[in-house]
Image (cartoon, rainbow, N blue to C red; front, side, top):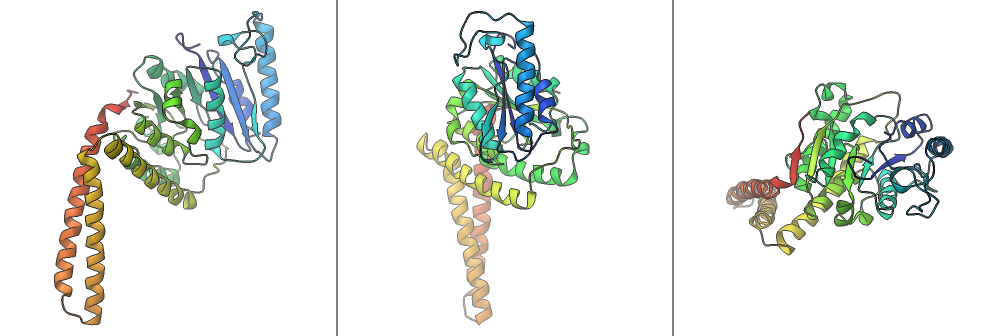
Amino acid sequence: MFEGHTVAVAIPAYNEESFVADVIDAVPDYVDRVYPVDDGSTDDTWREIRRAADDVNREQTDRTAVIAHPDHRGDGGTQTGGFARRVVPLRHQKNRGVGAAIKTAYLRAREDDLDVTVVVGGDGQMDPEQMGGLIRPIVDGRVDYTKGNRFLYDGGVAEMPRHRVVGNVLLGHLTKFASGYWSLGDSQSGYTAISTRALDAARIEEMYEDYGYCNDLLVRLNVADCRVADVPRPVTYGDEESHIRYRTYVPKVSTLLLRGFTRRLWRNYFVRDLHPAGLGYVAGALGSLAGVALLAASAFSLLLGASGAFAQASVGGLAVLLGALLLVSAMTLDRQQNEHLAVVEDQ
């Protein structure tokens, strides 16, 4: 337990046979249950998970006498947090995506009634000693979800590969816009912690299952009115291989974020309440699109030598300008409306 709260760790793993056992073994002692999830790996990841789980569970049994009290799954007595088995291996027969692996662990942690669930990648990039910093704001009752922010840590950007910096910055800004957490950054960070309340409120069963799950989850948390904190964390890059291909990843996640933004806009600013930010976004988008259409029409008219091209261009330019002003105003109102939901922790 961590300060009287039960803690689970989810470890999504796809082709991480060289790292996943060490990750399992490095989980801090205060963690009550560990859920490594093999997401349909084609190497020996599952074997390594089972081997590490057997070792940890055997050591746990040898170290602590089993108390005669059934755990939530009925698999015997209790040790840490009321569970006989500390490590519970889970497996997808087919590769479904990192979001699906995390969702599987989330659902199992919620079923086992754990208070906080931390996500740690199976590639060994996340320092287990930083875990307490993610958990504490949740157990203190200040936030519902925390995530590591590599850009807040001294030297964090310098240690990241250049292509990752560019991709993270671009998607970070798009995620601010889509999610409403305007003052938070490093949206692609996978080192996170979430409360059971947030798992319920965010309708975790519907979470996106591929890369981009972290962006989708932030949108869901905002719609659920959950508070989120950024926690500075260092970067650790070694011999692990990233499975993200940014040429396809950025366009895919951008489309996902657009859908998420429209969902948030509809539920927060029209269904839940009629808010000026929602009206500003809609009017600004329509005005900008109409202006662009008029500018295109004026260019076409000019090519054909038709009259009225200058008038069309003037009206189109004015519509684009007005639309842009409305969008900026809507973004300002949106940021003010969501400011109380975002917290940035000190390093």
